[in-house]
Length: 336
Image (tube, rainbow, N blue to C red; front, side, top):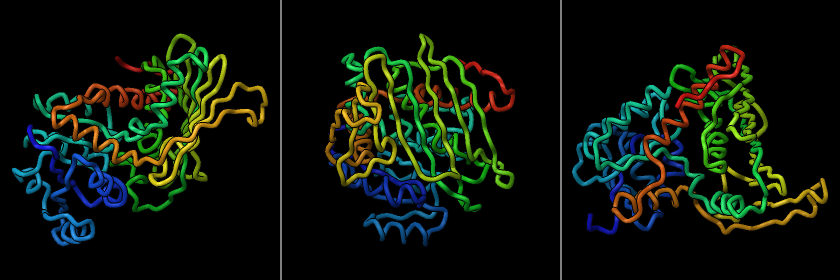
């Protein structure tokens, strides 16, 4: 590809696309958003006008058939991630798809059918934020000593029955929606995969979704991830990485604000209240734009992505094991 920009089509008028991801893609130097699709032509046109997008389609198939589009962003509900990603890829489009990639690892494995030459990635934007890069740099430097544990919390409060996150049959629930982020954090910072997990899950009696979950994951070699995620608790998020010499903490690890600096701390524990911790400030950064730019550079053939189909499958295998443990009340092995 000799062009300097790739042309994007947005699959649906989902809130995350309209409010965060599509404007961020438009800010990517190597990206241009040229079309958006909905099953409702009027809704597509209104969304296109709102975001200054030229073309609006009343079906997903029309978007896939547009020869001017290079890549698709797929923010559809979870149960449509795999089928619509495959449909787009088979139409010759590169695909950036929202997380979680599938309902099960078995479903995610269908993505191995994506044609050769198509760039695909699951949209964990956090892996493109400088604060995550900096913490991994600190870990690799040895400043923390041997990293033994990662502790994370991610919660919000949402009891809207019409929200897709509260609809169990299409992949709603906290583990799928936000539990996948601590899993990604541990895989990223440990630079490895968990061997087994055990979970304690409490479900909403009406929605049937998991509204509170505690998970412990064994990464082998004395390394552990523990996290809590909830869809019905006060909003909160943290990631702590504990080593034998020091602890690193990302203050806003997942929903980092795009227009203000972020902070991490490195604490040797000399004062237990943390007053002697070193605080590093990272410049303002829109992690969705960074993600879009990295994806575009891969499509343009300049810099390959470190994440693809197999990475997405591995995350789903951990989620599968969490749900298996919920059912059995025992440790569940993470399949390889």
